[in-house]
Image (tube, rainbow, N blue to C red; front, side):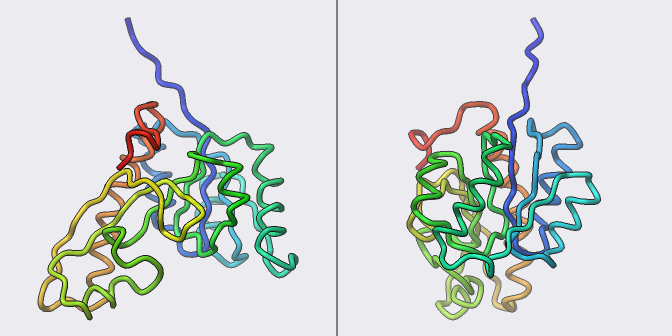
Length: 202
């Protein structure tokens, strides 16, 4: 008996170039991801991620942070925009805002993020520079469920990359990006397959 996979509804949040968004979109088009990307949301009107979405005929939503007095009211506006889309999963792909506890609680176990370090090491920004400054021999990327704590939450998958003596931050960043492009679609498909939950994340 043939099993027909159903696609989950995914909303992607992005603030910048959107390279992870492009990888996810390409994987979905190739039939490697059981997802329907119903919208791309940004806090940056000029984010190239929005242009990538338009080229793929994906709905785009821009919510201007300057129109709201604080994080909670901004996140309430985000919530109103995406609730009607009924997403099964929210994927953070370079979204450069910290989501409020209220927002995270409303979408508990339905928000996934990728971070360019081997969490719990190097939470926050400038991870590549910090790895080089520390003299680490390995760097990497982590996909995790989002909680109210910065770059925290149950780890879904991690992958290491070597740090070479000749590495600059830019070269190391590119190596980590290639790692991200491998593990983020994998984690999303695990979620789509129903084999992933916070209970079996690390």
